[in-house]
Image 1 (cartoon, helix red, strand yellow):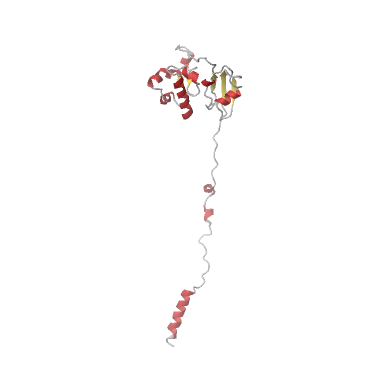
Image 2 (image 1 turned 90 degrees about the vertical axis):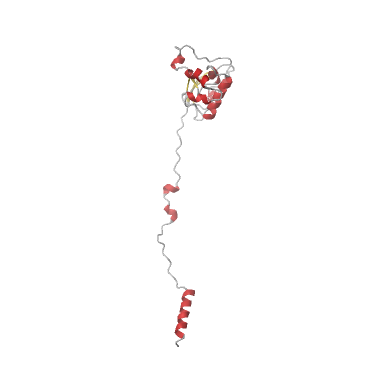
Length: 196
């Protein structure tokens, strides 16, 4: 009999470990869903703000069918302006114009005739001295650039290429970064150029 008590105790211990009692389902500490933890600001993409694009109003003169002022789309280029103006006249020197240049508001584009030279006045009392006819590095065509002292066709082409690749000139001093234009050339023409 005295052996029966330890045997029953041992059986109860084995049964306890082999057949665990049913434990009531645990209640989660919080029924808060982790997906709900993210705030709407974190999951929603903020709306993108589109930059305001201005339709440039541009004046075109010279050897085009219909000179005048035109308003074009924000992405328009000089080629689009020439088309809007009815195209080049037969005498137009189309090589003097960079047709790929993007238009800017208040820009003035002059299309020269073949053989036409655009010269800046040399008198200190002329309009050039007051800045009225200074050559704008950001809008000047090849013919205008070659009218500058020390600028031939190859340097004019280099200026246009630089402007196309790097965007508009911010200051006239940036002209010295163009291949072939050093301090000496810059000193010759700095009073005749501007950036707008």
